[in-house]
Length: 418
Picture 1 (cartoon, rainbow, N blue to C red):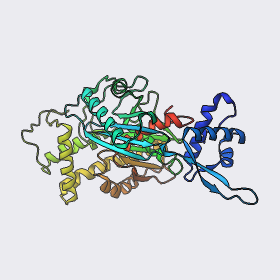
Picture 2: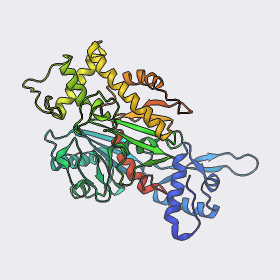
Picture 3: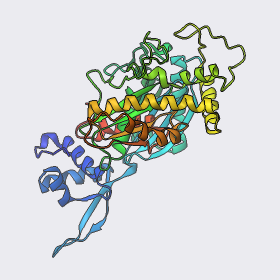
């Protein structure tokens, strides 16, 4: 836990130190406990807590008895309504907006279909309208907002808020997302990769209980990995860490658009599984489909809505016992196990969390099979087990993480994305 200092010139830093300590305690803390936890003097804790109470960021929540003589100690807790943040997840298929309070509880959320065209300007227009509706429905005053966080497909330029060249959304290349959304809403905006936001959500929502070394395997239109190492979200030199799509998991696998075979991202992304299902006769191709596009020159290129519909049909067929459908999904599980085993050995992590827009449909099958598949690949390197779990936050994890990006930057003594 970060330690505070007693110099008046860094009072704002000490406020975030106290807020962070209180947030990490599930039941709140007394002023005496805060002295021990933060390294601040008793007088500094008293002064800082008085300011936080005045700002409405914390509240006095009853008292706790002490051992021996003395009066009970007053417990300080976060005041959930003290501040809010909006999180936006821009997925090629859906736009998700959430409103979080200071305890990172979702107060309100809205989903809107992404424009089929993938047009960036249209996406911003829909997002801005959804944010206005979110505020109107919740009744939260704009003055109580700390800002907007956006989880976007990478790569991004974190300094300028530009989406650089997302491979699955080519219409967004070099799009000034931060500036455009700020202009549309009048609110400050922060931008992060979707996988980074998802990892931050898991870390922020469970600061005391979560492992300090885990990865979030994000499963959406594509796949990616968010990493928490030594209790900090790891973002890399340019905040673009986590692009795992071209790690080879099966040299005999499908050809990727990069020209190689068996890339992890191509092997398990919904579009690939859907194409395989059509080729194996599991599901019917949409009328007029021609196998003339794709990296091999023989495969169809579907829009995101069509992929979603066909992917759901594939999952339904597997759940109904269709052997060919089960083989397709089980092959993706084996490829995922290969990748996770390598990642666990590389980073010495003890926990892998899965989530994202496409995850819920796969969750039961993956969680049932993946631990055994990983055990079969045991390389004799790890000295501890690796737990596998689905995100407790649900399908909105990237949007929640985007809002946590704002809370983290505003109220943490040391931003995990700094």
